[in-house]
Length: 192
Image (tube, rainbow, N blue to C red; front, side, top):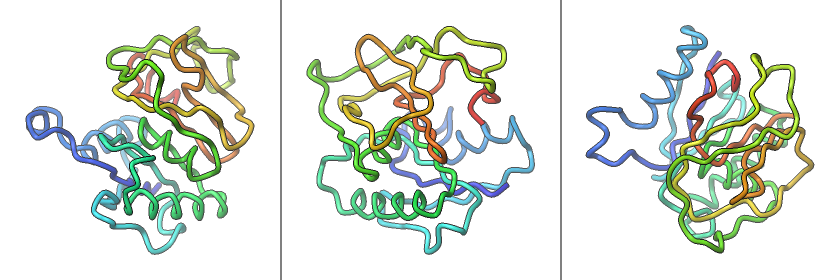
């Protein structure tokens, strides 16, 4: 399987030596599930976008220090690519900033949270168990660092856990899986 990583930021330089940058982090996570996975990276934060939505079997967007409503040209360009990916019914995963980006690109609404920044561990209740959630989990713990939230989804989700502080934590549709944070306590096999 060939995954296209749409890189939206770099990890803080102080942390890169110990933890790596986003491409290394996601490659490590994905290869735990399937060692044959191949990862190609596009540095979207520098305006680099894939030429073809079919260049990869699926797409993954990273977190970012930037907001989807900051008026940045590269964000608008990436929103256009996300719409192409969705129209082509290619699998698309959004993590943190990517969760907000996909929602905005597909017609949802992203806004600043009334309480400002949320940083730390977020405990989320699973509303409905799904067959792929083995073993079943009552909650989904996420590491978060954000000030924006998805306030309105672009389409009816098939799965959406909730937290007291943010009503839309994750969502899944036919080809999209998006999550506002980084999974903390759920094995990678529950996501893939």
